[in-house]
Length: 333
Image 1: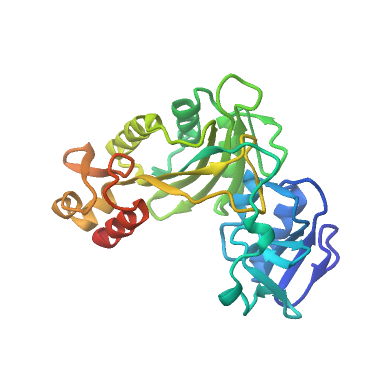
Image 2: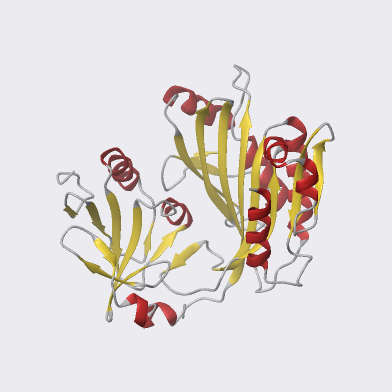
């Protein structure tokens, strides 16, 4: 790993990549290092200055426990998403003991200074298709894009920039060649077009029940107030996938964000849950009566004989949304 051209430091616990630039994407070199780190059980830590922004696909790649964004500022190092101070312990950056008393870095808490924030709508959709020769992947991505942004993705690829023209047949062919290994891809659209910019990632993998697509779709909208318009479209999509038996789960939330779908190492605000949907398997496990007696009002969707369930948080402000989300999940599990 030490000989990899993208790696600046490698230890028995971690790999450090330093990027001193305005915007850091998830390049093919970075995806290669991530794959090697996963295979060798190493933590990938990307080190940047405080004014660096990362792209949406790179941010989504940081969601796992084996990758971390580390920021070097005048007041020390901190974690790029939480702002908590970190120290180098000789093998990796770890959260500092002083984080318990000091809290997030003052640099992180200052917030962004160079852009007017809108808000991002984030949808996590998981569907499982029957594994047939006729299966063409990418339908979940394309339907989300058409429903929410009014246009199909313009580009896709295994890394950034996603320069290949959106082509579900080509995407499917790549996943078939790589099977049974999972395939992680990025997609983008809407930039420079009348509709809102959007992007995200999709991971395709074989499971016992078929072929799973895990889509994270993010759309940028102007203004700092949430409009419930997309919820109707999402409910319709969840209803259709529940009806075919393909829906596993759908969650949606919104949070403040930049129009260009890049992320600074600054406090932007906090996410707000919007909706959750369970597929037929989840409802069958919980029981239809229990699903309908949840602390958040829900309704059954899809096939009445084997229904899914839909819960919306945007139309109920009696309690904090995250408290209602937590209560719902505890009730269903």
